[in-house]
Image 1 (cartoon, rainbow, N blue to C red):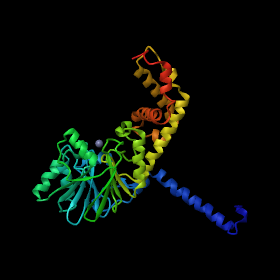
Image 2 (cartoon, rainbow, N blue to C red):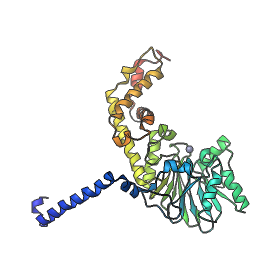
Image 3 (cartoon, rainbow, N blue to C red):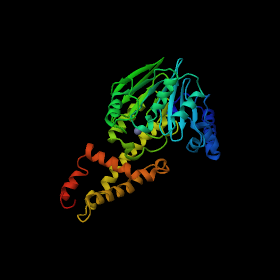
Image 4 (cartoon, rainbow, N blue to C red):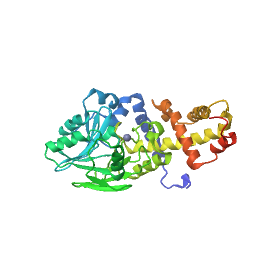
Length: 370
Ligand SMILES: [Zn+2]
């Protein structure tokens, strides 16, 4: 459309718009000049009474979780988040009892039960195991003992994959009393619907996403710490696609708050940040692969692992130069990036583009080196 032909174009309106732009420049510059203003909008003192607004996080969380026995934060009308040192759980208060997502470990369960009691006198009547890793469910016996003391017949809900893992390892926790199917199951707790998605290829073969449907909260431990990069191998995912499939599942659900079990409270922006990181990592790795041929690193005098890792180190160096500063400036970036590059390159070569590594290795002829 031709701007000059717009009947609504008026010089006075244009001047007003310019004035508006000046105002916006001022508004946008304020948080830069006074950083506490930016923090005030997104970070708040924890409160067990006042629900968070979507996108808000706990101010000073990294240190605060070690300074206090526990932190309780109200997320919604009936759902709360509890941090005890390095671990977090969420709980939902019904009319007759409390539903807890993951009983914690390392003598934190008893502290978590005390934290819950600061909000409600109702007993814990149901427990969800997000997955079978003992750092999240190791102290289920503490909740079971508390239920017995209160005369409560404790419900324990988990996916079939988690039940199988508990049996396979002989884990010292009470067996679930209710099993939801994989890849998608559902149960109700009073008026709340909870859907459990078990992708099985991210973090562990029973890693799940629990969606508290009406509360718009998700509990997906060991996915990614909000605002941070995922841990090594994308927190021990089987492959990149497994992580990405779960990420798209997460983004596709209707929620405002995300608990990864270890970090600050997550938001949709954190999930989109993760999607952007993966896209940029993939593009940077593919570009680096085009610039740094594996053949140049093959050295028959060296162990295959040695020259392979030297190649990955060089790929990471080149790929880092292609990444946005919002990623490279993260405290953990240099500790994790080489691992992430290897994870992406291995996945690309094994699952997407067979030409990248295997042909080069074939041309070098296996057998020359161990
Ligand atoms: Zn885990």
